Amino acid sequence: MLVTTNTGAVSGVEGLVVRVEVDVGPGLQAFRVVGLPDAAVREAQVRVRAALLNSGFGPLEGGVTVNLAPANVRKQGTSYDLAVALGLVAAIEQAPADRLSELLCLGELALDGTVRSVRGVLPAVAEAAENGIRHVVVPCENSAEASLVDGVFVYPVASLRAAVDLLSGSWELSRLRPKRASGGAAPASALDLADVRGQQLAKRALEIAAAGGHNLLMSGPPGAGKSLLAARMPSLLPPLPNAHALEVTKIHSVAGLLGGGDLVTSPPFRAPHHTVSPAAMVGGGQGPTPGEVSLAHRGVLFLDELPEFQRPALEALRQPVEEGKVYIRRVDRLTTLPARFTLVGAMNPCPCGYLGSSGRPCRCTDAMVHRYQAKISGPLLDRIDLRVAVRRLESGELLAPGSGERSMDIRERVMRTRRLQRSRFRGGGARLNAFMSPKQVARHCPLAEEGTETLRRAIDHFRLSARAFHRVLKVSRTIADLVGSPAIESDHLQEALMYREGDGLG
Image 1 (tube, rainbow, N blue to C red):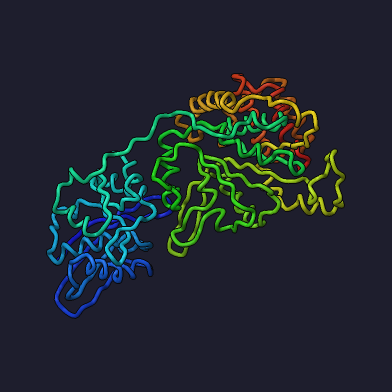
Image 2: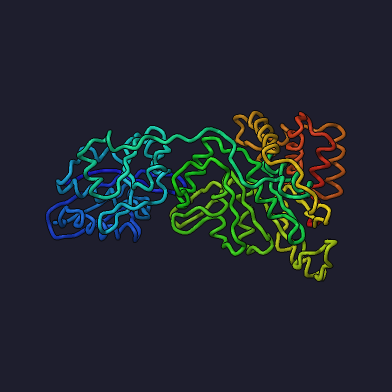
């Protein structure tokens, strides 16, 4: 008997509906899975046989053939188990088969018939909804995640027996009501920028970076507050709009980081250790799986002790920083992963950390300083818009009562500036000033007469590259937007140029 149902797969961070065709016929006992399965999919026959037997459905007799279509796409993982098992139960006529073609079934089977959670449920269910499949059977642990998709009915099951009972029972009694994301309230954060003493220049740079999506590098001695400042960057960012929240949640679902299955409404903040490999940074492995740059999509990627990262891992950042995407080539396919993030880096000015510090003399030679700073290549440094020297605080600043603006006040300005940018770029692709194309820079960055002369002198003095020229204009546009100026004035340009060369690395 031939039975068909549906399951889901993931390609990059996008879902794919896989049709499962199960045929049980006479002949010698055999269990064949075709359709480019990997080892985990081929091993499903062992899990499914034991789960059927231990769930009370008896041993399989005859030849079993399972086809996973489309047959030219490689199938990976364990999410196919439940669909195959339900197809077999229906094929041996121990459950009705009429509803199976309307279902999307996801889940890994334990040998006792328990249904275990799997990765990538959200993108698979979203793709199924696009294809008109409205009924989804998932493990209980993935039910909240699946219910984030509008227009689908989610049926959480804990075991194979429960899933088979569902085919014969009442769907209305079993389904989980769709989950709705909360409104656009600002994300709560226990970290506030007002807790950081002094460092007004660095705080101003953080505000500009948050408002325009600009990359930032902070350089200073140990203990000056670089990591404290970077950790408070998320408190300046507005919540993600619904479309972006669903996009980010899909990435976390594929990576297995979704936890309780709630929609990710706050911009992500990723801070990998400096021993991270290039593949872990940009993505790779089987699938391939998203790396740190994709997990930071629509949020912040913080790299502390920047020169201590492996050179290949840092150089791998060039393309995603520039294009907002990662391209991973395999023999049989090209996978594109989203990676539109704000890069925030922190570093010491030299190996001992005290170059230029008034608190302690530097013990490094000029050659040591040069080698240390050269670990960050010129092309990567050229892609960083804001560079700030974070100085050591004096005793008076440390002992003074807390002062400075609260994160919520700065966030209000950031949100107002981002609304202005959304209005400016409506229908134009870019959403923030940092992501403007050269054509958009020419259109949206008009210079006052005095500003043109200031920029001309800066190009000659600093020997700005074409990329640096455009990035200075983008930062200037954000500074002007923060004060509501339609044109870029000379003082806006001068502030942007100060951040461009402010750390002594340029």
